[in-house]
Image (cartoon, rainbow, N blue to C red; front, side, top):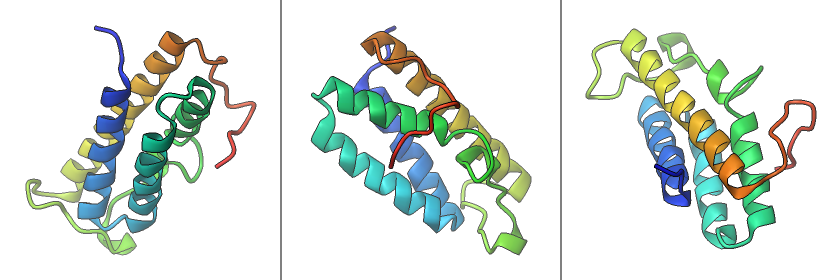
Length: 123
């Protein structure tokens, strides 16, 4: 199955909603803005490639979505459907991995420039 813009949006929304429910509000707010941005650019391939690169870049490295640790010390909360912070962090990691995989696949499908950590996206 080919990756789609809809799958990409679903990955962003799922992660946004999860982080909001966990009290990781800074990233939840940023992802909410990215979802809004996506609605304005989804037909412009160059802008969509930039959007994908930004999201892909945000999945790893210091200060990234992959770097978040949900815990009491960070004033996070355990989402109602989970029993512990360990489960919450496993769920967060799975959502980040999904975003990573979808952005990589959709970027390749659209013929975007290669994703690279050497050139940080703007935004």
